[in-house]
Image 1 (cartoon, rainbow, N blue to C red):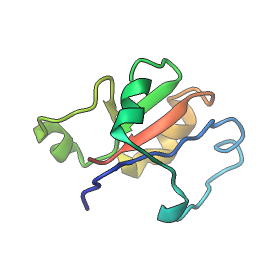
Image 2: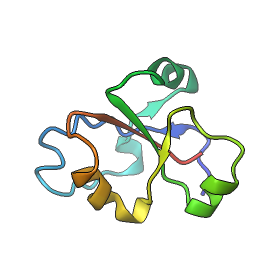
Image 3: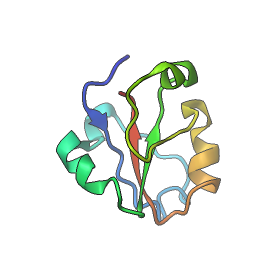
Image 4: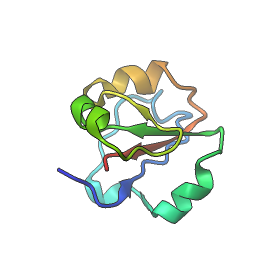
Length: 94
């Protein structure tokens, strides 16, 4: 499924990830406009993660500046161990 807007999950992960998995519905996930995201591109506290399939990400001409690809099927692994819990995650699927 293609996303037309950036799905943004702003987690100041202090305590949230430590408390264990949290289930949220699509309407609970905050949205961020591309203009607002553009303002955050150089913010060192923001980690922009592309969660498209690896093949879609590699084939795409369009990638967000400073974004990284992570396997969405491995969310718990990279969310719990790879990034500081004080970071703000921006998850993109477009």
